[in-house]
Image 1 (cartoon, rainbow, N blue to C red):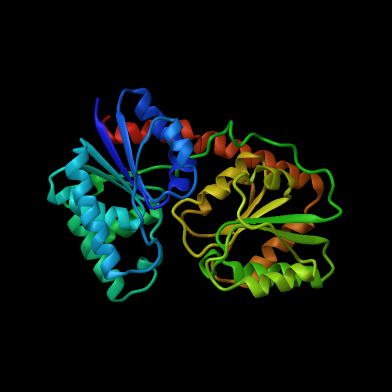
Image 2: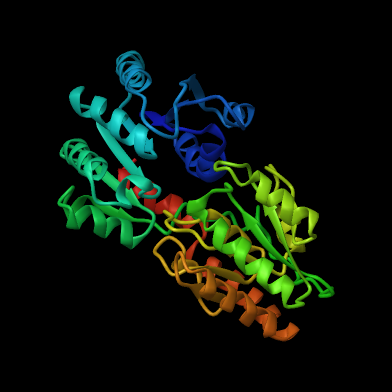
Length: 360
C-alpha cells in the first residue's frame, strides 16, 4: 500500500475527470489524499474514499505573496502526510508542488493538462516557466501529456527527455456516464452547443461572429452556451440572447441533457490539453466542429470539421458546411463520433496506462 498525495487546483475537475483513476488507486489498496480548493464535488470525493486537504489557490495570474504561501503550504503538507508518491495537475501544482517534491526527495508525477497562456507567446514569462519546469522535471518519475503537441513543446525546449514522457489520450471519457443518444429528429431549429468558460481563448469571439452571420443569412440556428464568464462578454452575450441568436444557461453541473438536445458541438479554442467537452459530446453521438490544433484535432475522425484557429471566416464556413448536410449525413457523423471515442478515448484504457506509467 502506498500513500498518494494529489495536488490539484479545482476539486470539481479532479472529481469529474480523475474519479475513475482515484477509485482504481483505492481499489488496489492505496491511501489517497487530495489537496485542492473546496469548490465543487467535495462530498463526492469524500464518498469515494479521498482524504481531503483544503488548499486555496489563485488559478489565474501570479501573486508573489499568495504563491509563496502556497509553496510553504505544500512544504508543510508533504512533511505531515509523508506520501510515497505525489501527483500534480495544472501549472501551479506542477511547479510549486513539483519544487517541494524535488527538494524533499519524494517520488512525483506531473500531469500536463494543457500549456495555457504561459507558452503562447515568446517572452519573459515563457522563459521563466520553461526554466522552472526544467528544474522540476530533473528528478520527476514521469510526466503525463494529453496530446503529442504538448509533449513536443517540452522535448523541443529541452525541459525533459523522451523516456520520461507518457502520452495519454486525454483524461478519457466514461462511456457509461456519457451514453450514446439518438440524433435529434426535429431540425426546425438547429442547435449548436458550446460548453466552456466564456473567454477569448476559447474562441468565443469567432463563434459569436459565425452564429450571428448564419442567423443573418436566414439559417434556422441557435447557439446554446453553458459556462461561466471569465472575460467580459456578458453584455455581448445578453445582446445575442435578446436577438434570439443565443440561449445562455450559465454553468450546469449536468451537461448531458443539453448534449442530447444538440445537433452539433462547437469548440474553436486557441489551445487545449485534450478538450473533455469534445469527448463527452462525441461519446453521446454528436458531430463536432473544432480547431485544427493538438488537444482538439484528435477528436475528429469522419465525425465533423476542423477549422483554422483564430479565423472567424473559416469557422463560419465550416458551420455552414455542416448546415448544408442532410439529416442522414449528420446522423452518420454522430455514429462515427461514438465509434471513435470507444476505440481511442475509453476512460478505462487511460486509467490503466496511467497506473502502469506510475508503476503502482
